[in-house]
Length: 288
Length: 288
Image (cartoon, chains in turn green, red):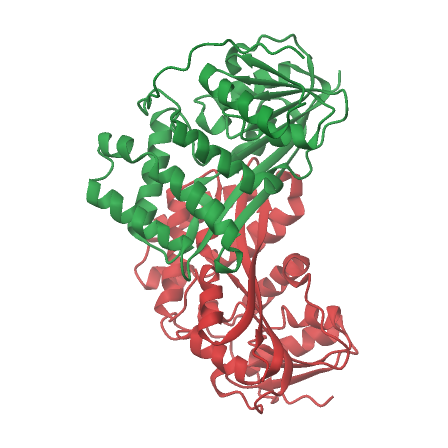
């Protein structure tokens, strides 16, 4: 299958300002972090998602391919189109999928979710993961995704919810740095607590048979791989990655920030425990 | 099997003051509420807990028998001893178990967890549910439970964590009333957020092979029975039941309280959603 990713030169890595960009930025370290996250979370998030051979599947907002490689791994016979608005992310995604699944049939397209270059009803299934939480108008986004689904086709959405975070030892400074990240995401137009409202969003966008279920991560010292892979290297790393933006926005002093991160890290060490809930939704476009 | 519950006359219903008593009080409405809660939650909490025929099982803090009837239902051949410090609760528990499981073999004992009238190693298994969160020294309690277990015997503990609560539509007044309940529980010596530290507590008390897992309730309009049975009639009802204590303690004005409860109820209606996590732990007393 032909790939459509433009071979734009990958320029110098830039961190976009939080008020206008993607809160996690586009650095190489970010790409590695998002990849690690997907490895640890793959089974938790992808279980139950298998697409039939030959079915037309669209992933929107594939980013650096963190989920794409698992989509391909679980549904090797599906005809996957992976879309992202960033050429740089697509280049990383393509390399990653080529490395992990050399024969995978993926069509890469650079496009914006709000201007999808596909006909109405072009896909049997649509998959989006950690995308709606970054959008100012997730309901509008869902309507656009519905349009490219055939009647009866399925949409799968996975989102987190920062309200699900709690940990031991509890710490007000640690909770404060998490709140900083949520506020940066809000300033960029997103909603770090979107998971809890997936059902009403899907219903408002005209989907039917919507079903939302929590997918919970709980990590303590009896699951060292999970607290290293998720608590430390995914969640705490994601919070720590917005330090510069948080300080620039005046949301914390350097000392406050560093203390918060230090105390948050205790949730991934010794007797620490950590809890986070993702939400996975499946809904259908109404039959004609 | 003989029952040991003293036939104390059930006196006038009294609400104990929160600073010295059990935060949920002992009224008849409370008994009904705690019973409803157990029905809806039974499968979520009890799945995986089955005791062999003839094994000696101790439930401590059985209260009004909300869990006892399910213990009996799932392990009808076990020799269950159910303990509570309240004669009034035991009387209700005995009537409830007699109603739901007429032939059940339960020995009822009025006793305090910190003065258990049993020999060291008297039980193969111990079960406690929603008990540690009400105690000023849960670590000491766990050591006492360990003492009455035979070496290699198992302890099962189920606790909630108020930090796991989030809902749609989000509401600061609603979060405030939940916080009032947690503060009342703290004033009574308890910890409404104990679930997250079950593992370190068990390890500190000398248990081995401890394993803690979340048991999550997520309810939206697609599971009306769950949001009626859990969100509305269990969780919101539990918060609403401490109104008098919260006002007496000066934690809220009547208007603040009523607004908070009204907004919390929206999580169980229309497009509302609600999330809560229980933790279930199983650990063993070290072999000799």
